[in-house]
Length: 85
Image (cartoon, rainbow, N blue to C red; front, side, top):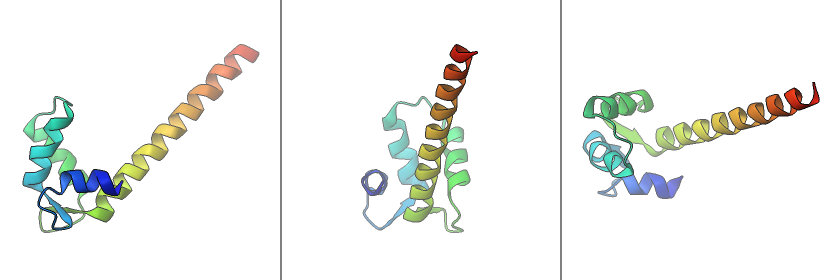
């Protein structure tokens, strides 16, 4: 997760400015509008200075990974239950 943070923190100051986020996120080819990118930034950031801390960024990634794992586990469980029934 630290490497991903560093990818966005292009000036290496330990925080991701909104400008950096706007410049880097489109390189992931997610086809997001500038408004969507700003909404994502605002949802993630707990800072009042228009930046993302490493903690905010990593917590968001960590929560996303945990939710995806839980969803996959639930899908597997449902699939197995249907086959047994």
